[in-house]
Length: 574
Image 1 (spheres, one colour):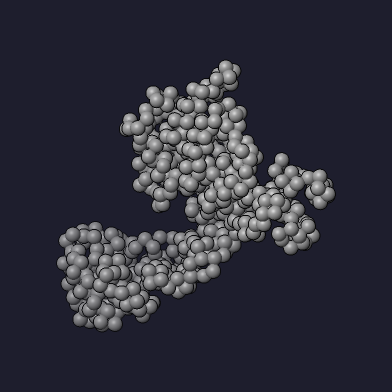
Image 2 (cartoon, rainbow, N blue to C red):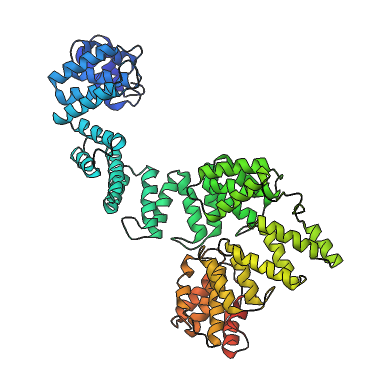
């Protein structure tokens, strides 16, 4: 055995001189201590003693042969040993026989005989055979054996294998039974037995995150994701970053989130590539950086991340930041389709658009739609004060590519300028209202248009309806802010609304939550909708300041109470 103590070297010296007791001790020490299998000398001695009928040496030599540590294995010899071991010690003999018939060698492998040996061994009292049999039933015959039967067998044979492996299998079986509490209990025992295994941490974190087998607890979920991250798990690093970005289980911390996401990318986390790519493309929480966005998205696409492929396909489709390439876009969407765990409306709609463009079906990109609309096209229309053609082209392209954010921005700009005739405005508004049920950006845009009277007649009630549609896609801080402000305005006009229901969404909000917290500080200061509390107001103002919201809350509060400023004036201009 390599690198052993002086005492072992002395023992090996005696063994090499022919001392049989020393040889057997060396074989035992090598077998129990070495992870590399027996050294050649010990292997040779073990074979000699096995041929002579030594039961222990037969087991040791067979395990080395099955592990690939023996050249030119005589499989018939091993089979004969197993038959003799069955007669001498059935529990061990049947187990070794099952291992022999389970091996990868075509000369001896036989699933039917392996299963027969496991059954006989289990009946003879072998817990090793019992556990192997339960695993076989679980993996190969789940329809013929109930989860409870398999679980009972595993629990009866609990000392058969490494405890961590046993607990992981039991957790899986309990999960299939729907016994989520027991599954979580086994997961925790797995983690206790092997605290350096990040997989156990990830499973436990997921249970806490989803509330499976226990009350949902994002703080505990983050704790276990952090453990997995500390153990080098790329998914653990990604989840810690994502949770800090969303403020789940912790205060929102973009800097920490980006740090963990970048570390996850370094370990080839596909999901982290998609998140960072989108952040840098949209300029959300980080400065917009096209080069970084494309780099992250390209790596994510190579790692077959569905969201990276989806966004990169859109960019190739539009020729935005990358070469316009319909074939490449279609390939990326094929990869995204295969990689996607869930297919949402945006995914499906983008897929339809790319396939239409890639195969030439529907409206060709270079004819009826007049090609991509550029900033130069818009500038010429402004200079010539002629918006009829660009309005028609933009309408046609939006009908085909409703998820194109640049096209939506241009549509909002034209509506803001009030340069279209009434019929065109009606067409645009009607088209956007149709998209609002599927596209949160459109619902938000319509809400803003009605709320501010910009591009549409001001109507707070219509604004609230579209803001609520946008909220259905996720708790977005900006949407919640506008809903509460809008409902407050309605209440001042006599239209009483239930505001606190929307306040409950604040802790789950994504995006820029600073104005939300600032508004909550004002509400707590006067006891409007929420309890009046100087301490809570101070806490909310502190959270807003931490996230970069700069304002003189004492002056705002005084101005609001005196009537010289509305609640909306205090929050939205910033």
